[in-house]
Length: 116
Image 1 (spheres, rainbow, N blue to C red):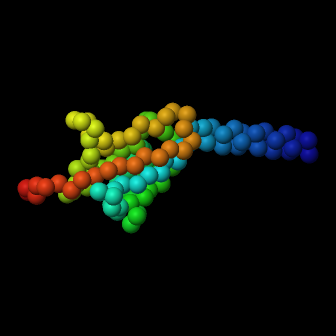
Image 2: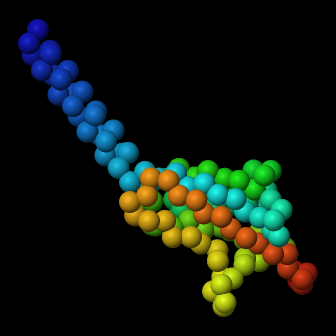
Image 3: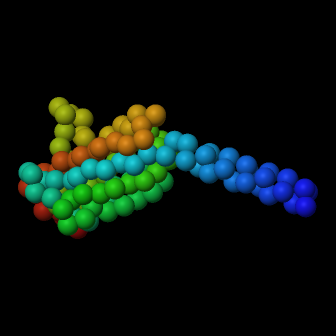
């Protein structure tokens, strides 16, 4: 019976170690995608590993490992991202040690029709 308890104890320790390792670096990023204050649904948001889409309120929640240190959007047809001078704002950096972060994105409607 002692051997059985030692094996179970080691197995439990291994499982706890694995659980801790998988939780290390986990981050939850939330945010909203809007166009002139109005929510934009169906926009893809990614951290380079996982992808989610915004809901009808333009909100999203992305759970990931923060391996790359940023989240970005895939700009939907008919929109363009806002910019800071000449730099488009389609991504937000996430601090390496963050457990939670907020990353909001703004879009504007394009004035030109897409030519096929």
